[in-house]
Amino acid sequence: MLRTTRDQIALIRSDLDVVTAATRSADLLWKGRALLLSLCGVRVDGKNWWLHVACTPRLTAYLPHRRRGGEAMDDFGTLTRFRGVAVHDGLMSYQDFGRKHARCNANHVRELVAAGEAFPEHVWPESP
Image 1 (cartoon, rainbow, N blue to C red):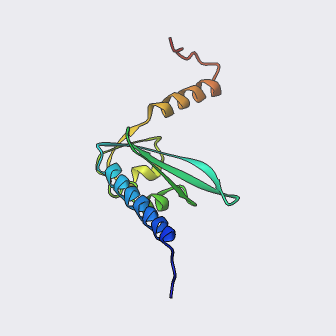
Image 2: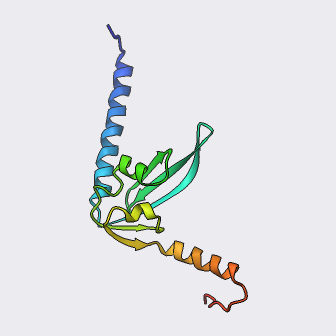
Image 3: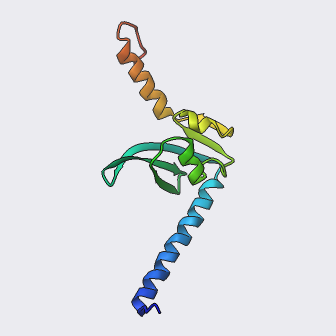
């Protein structure tokens, strides 16, 4: 027979409340009109993983996974449940879901700066 104290029961209840709140937040993310999707590399137990990020102006989900592309997105339901505009960097895995898409302007700027650095012999417009 498992014996628990009132404190242990309170901790279990608070953990359940956190899980319930996280589930509700994820549901709200997928119901939004637009969702920013991004990812970056992180270390988990000394190994390389990917931190997938999905956010709206009010909510952010951090989703660590050992894989970068479609497998992780399928596991999290990143775009399978989302019906709005996905704003992202153009990663091909995002395109596989066939929803509406928009490219993130921060990525456009980064790519234009890289092009200017890679081809300095060309004349590039300067920002004001």
